[in-house]
Image (spheres, rainbow, N blue to C red):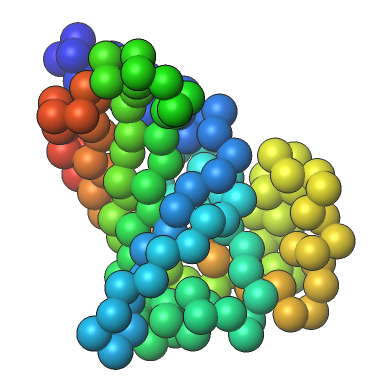
Length: 149
């Protein structure tokens, strides 16, 4: 139980401290990865990012909502082999209604104030990735699977 608590705390710290993630989508037999600015809900059940509604990632998610996001804390140094960790969050994406969910917009803008105008623009789609499973990796080979209910 103590190790599970430690992993959950490290996962929470990572998701709260990092500003960017790579989102992986899929369409027509082809994977596609994009860098996005994201925010996590405090319970870690959902990760939020914003994209224009005319992007490939948006179109891919509208056709196939299953997606993954990868977040890490690497510093691009040799010491990362021992100290870096990463998480892949797998789940289903959906568009968040900006009018019905102002608290989501507030959460996102609190972490990314420079993106407020973009988030509020008519072409911006707020995407919520409802997490089913986290894969937390330490030292490039120590993998912990965390399933959410």
